[in-house]
Each structure stands twice: as C-alpha cells, then as structure tokens.
Image (cartoon, rainbow, N blue to C red; front, top):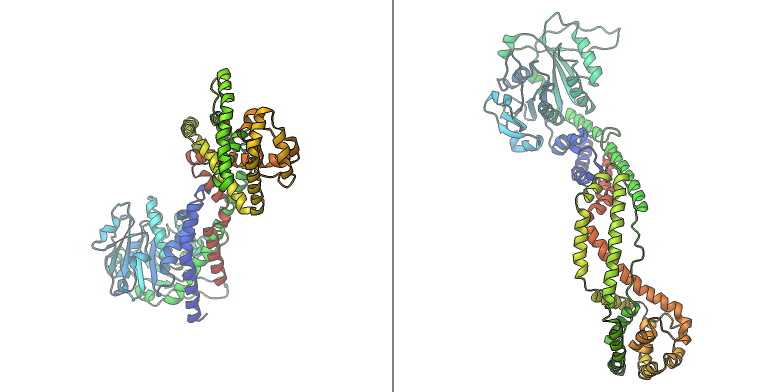
Length: 627
C-alpha cells in the first residue's frame, strides 16, 4: 500500500474513531442497569482513548517507551538515550513511580502533548528525583531534548512489576500510547508473570519491540540469552525488531558509557550458521533515529485498530455482551409483566343520573334559539315540580348523600385494593426477578413506602373535583363525536330540538300518570338509526323527572329496540371516565412510587435498538470494512 492510500485509510479510520468514542460513552450510560464491566476496565477502550483518539490522523511521530521490571536498569538505559541523568538511578531499587518524557525541540509547537498522554498531569522536568515521589496523581515530567530527532518522544516508565498497582496503571497507559517499546530484561526478569502479562498485551497490539538484555556477564551469557529470548517470545507472542546485550558494568552505567551490542535473532534453520557475535558498540539513540517512523507508526495504529475490532477481545464482544444482557432482561421483564398485571376489578362507575345531567348541561350550553329557551323554561318548571317529592323524601329518609360523594367513597375503596395488589405484585417481582431487577424493586419497597403512598393518594383524592372530571370527559366525548361523525351529530341535534317540543307536555303527563304518552310521541323519531344517540336524547324526553319518578333506567317500550345501542353509548361514557380516573391513579403511582424505573427497565431491555448501540455498530462495521 503506497503512502497516499495509507493516508486515505487512516483518514477514514480517524473519522470513524472520533464518532465511536462519544457513542460508546453514551451506550455505557444507557447500559448501566445491565451492569456490564465498565469501559475503563476494558483494554480495548483504554487503547481507543489513550492511543487511537489522540494520535490517529496526527502527523507522524513515534512514542518510544523504556519498560521493564524493578531494579533492572531501565532508568540507566533511558539516561543513555537522553544523554544525561534525566531519570534518577541507584544501585538500590530506586522505584520509578512517574513517567519522564524527552520531547524533541519544537514538538510542542506542532502537537498538543496533553492529548498524546491524556491520563497524565504534565509537569515540566526540573529534577530527576521527582519521578520517585509518592503521589496519587498520575504525573508525567517532560523536558526538551535537542539531540532527539524532531518526531521522536522517549519515555522512562514506572516499574511494570511493582507491588503498587498504581504503577501498573501508569505503565499500561504509557504502553498504550507508545509505538515502540524498549523491553529491558535480565536473567532474573524475563519470565516473571507480571512482565509477561504486560508484554503479551503489547504483542496483541503489534507494538514494535526492541529487547535489551541488561546486566549480562559476557561472554559467559552468550549461550543463554537465545534461550531467555525464546521463552520470552513464546510467552508473549512478540517478535522483536532488534536485540541488544549490555554488560554488567556499574561504573560505565553511571558514567553513561554503557556499550550496546546488537545480536541477530536466532533462526530455526538448522543449516543456517549463526554469525559470530559482533561486539562493536552501537549508539542506541542513533539506531532509534534510523527507525522507519512512518512504517512503524502505521503498523502500531493498525495493530490497535485490529485489537479494537477483535471478535473476542474488542468492541464486538462488548456489543454481544450488552445485547445478551438486554435480551435476558427483556425476557425477564416480559414474564414478570405478564404475570404481575394489576387487574382493577369492579372499579366503580358514577351513577347514570350524573352522566345524564352532565350531558343535558352540555347540550343546553350548545343549544341556540328557541330550543335553548324551551329547555331553560323546562328546567325551571321541572325543578319546581320535583321539589315536593324531594322534600318528602328528605323528611322520610334524611338528607341523601350526593351521588358524586358516594362515588368518591366507592372509588377510594377501589384505590385501596389497587395499592394492596400492586405492592403484592412488586414483592413477587422482587422475589422472582434477576440480579438486575431485584435490587431496584427492593429499593422501591424499602421502608414505609406503602403508607407514604396511601397518605399522599388520600390527600389528593379528598380534594379532587369529580364534577369537573366528569364534565371534562363528557365535553371531550361530545366534541369527538361532533368532529368524527358530523352527520350523526347533526341528527342528534335535531332530535334534541324535537325533545324540546315534547318536553313541556311530557313533564305534566309524567307527573300525573307516568311515562307512556311521551314514549309514544317520541318513539317514531328513534328506531335503529338513532339507537346510538347520546343518552341525552332519551333522558330529555322526560327531563329530570325521569330519574326521580321512573328511575335511571326509565325508557319507553316503543324505544326499547334501541336499548343495546343506548347501553353501548353509556358504556363508552363510563369507560372514558374510568380510563381518566385510572390514569390519575397510574400517574401518581408512577411518579411517587416507581419513579423512572419502568422507563429505565424498558430502555435497558430495548438497548439494541437505541441510537447509541446502532451508532457503535455502524462505526465498528466501517472500521472492519476499512481494515
């Protein structure tokens, strides 16, 4: 692949990566209920955040990190590269705790150093001992090194096998940012578990690695270093780009005169003769300067991208984990929802007389001309006619409870039943749910949740204006009929006008002998076509006297053929009112008890359809296609 194609490839990859990071962070927030391992604890995510986002698309530069275990001379090697004592050393284990970075002259004018090392606090270097100080902050001390090539950064890192795990975190952050690792090993520190784990990750990311066996006893160790190297490479899956030996010479190390002897990599070809050791010292800094910067950078970026899209270790595995958890939650939630429906049995209905009166009021408010005048006069006369009957009833039975107050009492009993059943179902869900659902339901049920909810419901129920509730329902239903079925509504209006003509006669007759004559006079206007009419058409025939004398179900025999449709209309009105009241209770329970839990459960169960999940999938698919 030529340079132009490589540039185009990485430009497209950089675009996908820039979209990927915010989508992943959003998906992590939305997937919190599913309890996946945090992104910050996933190697591929830290690689994305610490390597790809800061460096992909940037002008070519190499980050070289000197890495290794405790007391093996890492800082000595680093100081040789720096040409000065940039990092503290000691015959004892000095214990480097913070990274030190050599920056070429002019680098900071072209690049944002903080972006290259996003997890570190940057401090300008003033003293070599600063890297040895204990601190919870991840510090990186930098200094300009004029002798470095213009696109080469070199770092000394904390010990990768330290007892302090914070040093591992810092060393890992440097490893992810680096393109080239100078692996400093010794006879004692080439096969340690911590060392192998660190370099195994570097091998997965296809880092360029230069191996230096330090503190060698030469020439005695010449037969052994190939064995050490073979073990190291087999355990870490690394193929070194170069191998060096350095002698165990403390004075030379302190005086920055340590020689570096390059060695050829052993081959498996038995017929090929191994060349004699070349003990001409190499200038390690000069060898680094001769590295093929562009080729190595492209290689390490591609290695990081491949790790990001790895089916088992990368984002595809994370998406699979989220999808399986979401689907499992969805199945559990569906089962619990199906088996825990709170059925409102025998929710009370308001008295028919209340609906009739409200419908009559609605018609009266919307009548015009002579029909409104006649109905108004009738209402006045009707009230006068009924007053003696009502007075006699009060004398015999006492003051009756207003119908709407009776409904209020009956509805409160229904509310108590619903709350009781709801808490029983929630407890069952807590007992039967999985590890995601259980703690959240238990949190809802904690303490005096039941008594607090009932107290709140009682307070709101006692002050509710039920008349206004019913009025709102009737108005909505009548307007809906007027809007959706104008022809039928027009017929009802005409029938209402007819009832206005009949009512004065009917009222007198009804008071005297009953309902018969009025039924006979109005029945011809009804028939099957009018059977779905608003209750008002029937009730208005006898006005308020119908309910008082003949009872709420009084309808003439001549109109009985329309009874089924009349009942259907009544049922619609009752259903609309009941739905409104049930919605009132549901909203309060939702707000005061459940909070955002139902929405969170639904969102987590449907996470694979979320915008963030789809965006991450899209970015990964694009990267896989590019690679």
